[in-house]
Image (tube, rainbow, N blue to C red; front, top):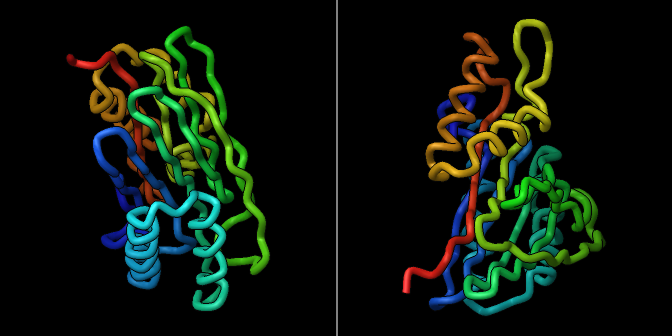
Length: 213
């Protein structure tokens, strides 16, 4: 996570439930600074509480949206991707609420985009959301990110782009996830060549491996 200022509006978290379920979230609150960080704080408390009560992803996102429509100040809104992973099977359930679609870089090199969901959170009171389903196979990498990386620009007004983002992961996909993310940040710094990031940059990667036992 690299904020564009001292306090940013990007957010990510993991919510383990028991030994076999992992919920995770990546989100981007419109704007920067303290107001956006306060939105992040309230969202974290709400989602963690709902997950502990074992509410469905649809229930969580739909009601978070209604809450933010009533309480959000100054036209702020949130894009988010909320996922639930069955660790033993690799079954992934998710909702994409106006967020940049995460990619699954498959072990065989194929790339899938996780689009299903609905509009951003905090704008439309009766917004409807669609739950998506897929599987994370052994060796597959789920790459979640915020738009600060793919929309970063260099001195020639060229975007870093989804294509460059995906190609770096494919090239590095056999390495440790931390090494892959460090490669992405290094390439981003070289690409921007001293130009400050215009937005927060956040990465959240998950890879399925063989059980240790």
